[in-house]
Length: 565
Image 1: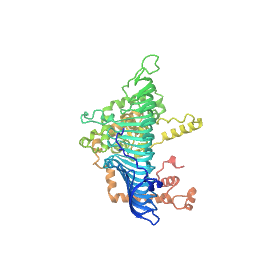
Image 2 (image 1 turned 90 degrees about the horizontal axis):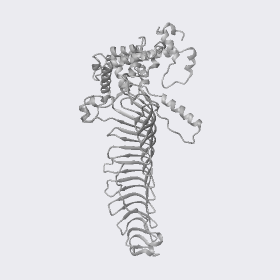
Image 3 (image 1 turned 90 degrees about the vertical axis):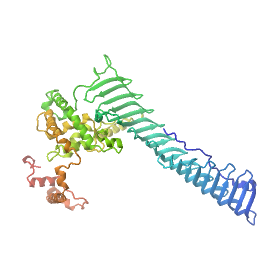
Image 4 (image 1 turned 135 degrees about the vertical axis):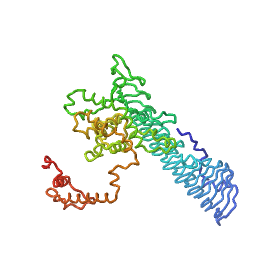
């Protein structure tokens, strides 16, 4: 929480009531009109000890002047009918100042307030002497620590962003100087973020809290660093703690779905280990309740094998063999476990950006970034898995099921929400959960997801091989284990295809051929597509799928079974 002192000062006040000038002036030196009114330039000393020097009109302070209160406050600026109104500057005895618009003696409109030591300033809108509207409050001389956003009645209220001197920041809703509503906060030093609901400065409602494991200089060399990097919680919060229903995804790939109380697992829940084995039962104070008549599973420990959810890849014949295919796949992955983990680590290191911090620059392999989705596709490409038979996009689509996040917890609705409205929200929630970018640059994989992605890619690449375990072994032995893989992952090494396409003549020739083929495809449009020429000319030329298939058939590229298309 911020503890910066914004500074205190007397509030500017109105100068003198118009009807009181004549009776309150003790001494006046200056111009006087024929009618006896103060007129033009003059100096007035008031009985209370105040002093004014400036313009007068019909006996009233008007125009530009300087008013000094007996307690040391000074106003220099515009006056209208004895009242500070227009543009001016207030100066307090402690050195604080205000420069900007004034109405009836109060800060009103646009203005800049500099507090006592000059480091804390406010530049923005005012209303009746209080910060109100849009404004920026800075807490240091260079303006790094600051609040930018909306104000109401001298308090942060509405949408705004707070940048703290520590580097932490918050952006979102505010009410009465406290974080309220929807907002995001980030603690860069620890790699933490929270995105969700806030009430009175604390997470309260539904939100997501995620943080990366930060390595220290004393961290042992690569032991498990690539498998303990990121944790996240998505669910309900109360007064800053996990409370209610939520899902915690641990850095090693384990997950917990269930109830929480005071930041601890408490109530019914399901804990999935890294290998895929699941404990379903009750938890109390963060511990599983074991034993008879507890309603829980008999064991709370992982098994010896990965349990991948790949039943959808098995043929009916394999599924008829009950658990045998899954067991065979588990044994295959266990046999190559150390090699696969080393490949995961090398691929993650090759695809990770180097931390600008000097310590990480000396040891880039310690950067605790997990394998990204683009990094996985890059591995498959450089290992020779992607090619003419299987494209990078096909591999990315195949792997998407393995790494995509589990559907987030649906936010609770209003207690008075109708059944129809809740059902509509549920359907929308499910649609959103099914969507996903297969090449999401922000997507990442823990080791278990990496292993499943490899199996799914192997299923696409070696589909004709019998048995999912044999397909996986083909991929590992033929593409991932060769000693040349380290060289292939070297970013400075250019793949043959990339080197070929880097040649300008080759690239231009390929582009020219592609344009020729595209014109041929558009030229074959006929039949159902004849009326396409009557449509308005499009900015980007297009061709129908039917025309493309006809072109392929004319080139003899379709199999006999496809000729009826």
